[in-house]
Figure (spheres, rainbow, N blue to C red):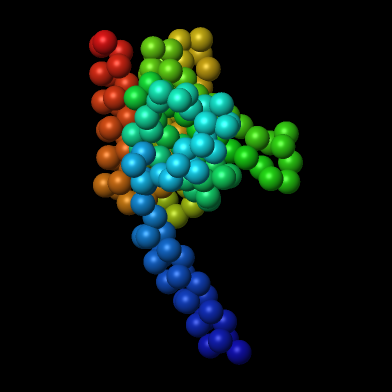
Length: 151
């Protein structure tokens, strides 16, 4: 019986490890028209905005973390309890600071960018993946924000 339990535990760990390696952030071009329309319907994407990078920890209908040419945004939709829904965004000119938190070595937590706005509002943009994918997302978001602040 113990051999069976050890085998199941081993296979579970291997499966979780392999599945976590498959995750990949997307560019705006990787999103379908249906995906883009869904995000627009949430009110956190304007018709003239272009998503640069996007990530989700579940599926696009339930959650999304992204940045565009104009803002950083995050949403969470709880299909069982709408009072838990969350929609956060800030345009680049409203953002005072962006602080990356790399948790790629953690098995249970996603890395994130902490966004602080000029009116002291804070929210997080979550990113999953390996260190290279996470830091590509972080650096691209920070570079886009800095470039928008200069203009």
